[in-house]
Image (tube, rainbow, N blue to C red; front, top):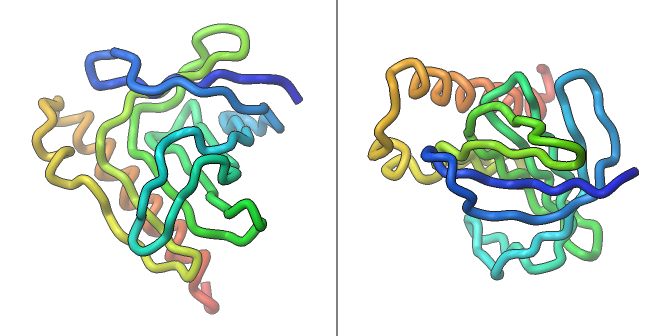
Length: 153
């Protein structure tokens, strides 16, 4: 395990947020890390995410999203926060970044899904191909989580 820095970037490439986590493993194009939440307390569809809550994050160098599994300090699952964005880029030893495209998917612990920030996404000045990739990534995530909670799937 080693330290890794994550940089969230705007569409213009500007740094929005930077934090550190611990790299736990790599599997092909997937980069797994653990990081405590370092932002201000936030409410997500009735769930409170607090500073220090443990996140298990998965970044992909070949997919247009990343997934954060969020647990409370007591270990109980709160849900998954999924960012739609350009594939992660390894900028150097121990540094990964991604360009955030505003659109997000919240999946509660019971599987209920909520798409977030659709208006912000619609307002972005995106090329048609980028917009299509982002919407395709959202649909892929929705299907992944639909299957996860489908007893017959």
